[in-house]
Amino acid sequence: MSGTFTDVLPPAVLSRHRDLLVAGPSRETVWPVPSRILASTVAPDDGLTAVTTRTAARTMVDRLVRDVPALARERTGVVDCTPSHDEVRASPRERYWSVPSPVDLTGTSMAVHDCMETLGEQGAGDRHLVFDSLSNLLMSTDSETVTRYAHQLLLLADATDAMSVFPIYTNVTDGTDFERLKHLFDGMIRVRRRDGTREVRCVGIAGAADGWVRLPDVGTAPGAEAD
Figure 1: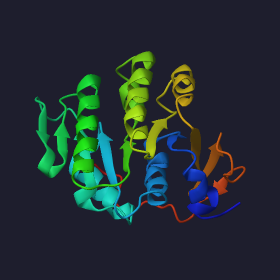
Figure 2 (figure 1 turned 30 degrees about the vertical axis):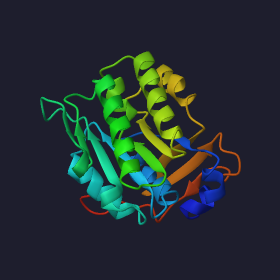
Figure 3 (figure 1 turned 135 degrees about the vertical axis):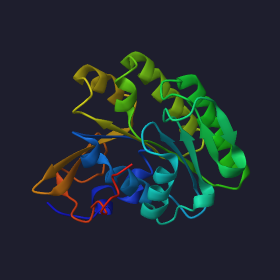
Figure 4 (figure 1 turned 90 degrees about the horizontal axis):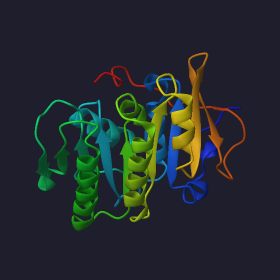
């Protein structure tokens, strides 16, 4: 079966499922799908907090603004947890917060809270949340801790009636860890590649398309996956 992303997840369905786990075998397979979810959700006056543990903050923001048509750069904040700096830094005017390590979960939670508060003060409507990958955390922190942390971030986003999108890569994530985490979410989107084309399947999402759906329009621009 082939279709567009709105065929898979109509806006009315997305409005009832606000916390989504996006699971696939690798970063390269999963990467475009969170942006497509946000593109179907974000309204012109909404804001977005992006949390990155690997990709450079500027690259991640550029990518999201490019791929989510209604998203404005001035309503996009980023929490930079890449291990490229050695101190906490906050620049609300620039909507940028840095935390020295992706496993500084307390610092990251506080930064996400501050970012969402700042976006609200700057006039954003719903304030959505996207995390680059829970798998990056699971490689250095136990799953119980990561589960508590993800739950805390979901509560922050739920308080603003927003969409939360969390990718996970099954090629580097233990099956037990994956099972523990998936129960936090309203629903899950599985992603795979067949014959060079991405396919998605919705799990636990009432009203979504049944079975695997090919998404030929979910491509990756040349160089887009390079950090």
